[in-house]
Image (cartoon, rainbow, N blue to C red; front, side, top):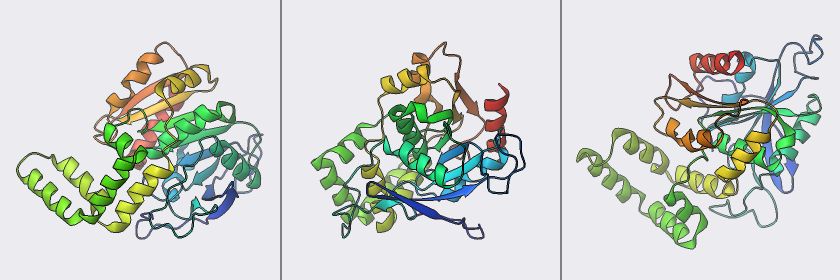
Length: 308
C-alpha cells in the first residue's frame, strides 16, 4: 500500500531478493561522478545515497533529495517491506491475511543496499544514508547493525528515539495482537468514540485526525499492523545508537521540525545529552511540522547540514 499523488510521475522500479525478502527500489542521480568526470545521466561511479521513506508513502518521495544534496550522489530509494512491491516472499509468507509475522533483520539493510548499489554502478565503499520518520528508525537500525557500511547519515524526524508502552504491548505480545484485531473488527465504533471525545474536548484536533488516518479503512489498519510487525526488530536501544554515533567517523545529522507533533523535537533530547561534545553529530530544528519533504524545508535542511 502507498499513496502516490495524482499527476506525479511513477519512477522506474526494480527489485532485488535477499534472504526471502523481495525489496523494490528506484534510482535517481545526474551530473558528475566521484572523479569529477561527466556522468552518463544515471549516476554511475558516484557514491550511493540510500533513502528510506515515511510510513504509507511511496519511494518517489525520496528521489528529489538527489537534486538538492550538497554532494553528487547516486540516489537509491528503497521501499520498506509492506510498501509498494517490498514484502516477505519466504516460506510460509503467502496466504497470510495480516502478514508481517517475520521481522526483517537490521543487518540485512546494508547487504540489500550494497547489492543494489553494485548492480546500479555506484562507487564502492561507504554509502550515505537518509531516513525520514519510520525510515529514520530503519536507518538508525541499519547504522547500528553495520556502521562500517555508511558514510554521512541524515535522519529526518526519525522515529525510534522514544518507544510508547502501547507500541511495545501491541507489537510484542499476544494480548496486543488480540487487542489490535479487536480494534479492527470494531473500527467504526472506535471512530465514533474518537469523534465524541474530540467534540467533548478530550482529544486534540491533531490526535483525532491522526487516529482517523490510521483506522479509517481495513487496508490501512492492516498496513499499520504489518508495518509495525515487520520492522519490530529495527529499533536499537538508545545506548547502542549513542555508542555507534560516537565512534562513527562521518557526520551524523538529526533534523526535527520545530512544530512537529508526530515526532516532536523533544524526542531527541536524551540522545543529544548522551552525545554532548561529540563534534560530528549535530541536532537541528527547522521551521516545519512533520513534513520535511517540502522543497523549502529540504533546502533549509541541506543548508544546515552542509554549511554548518
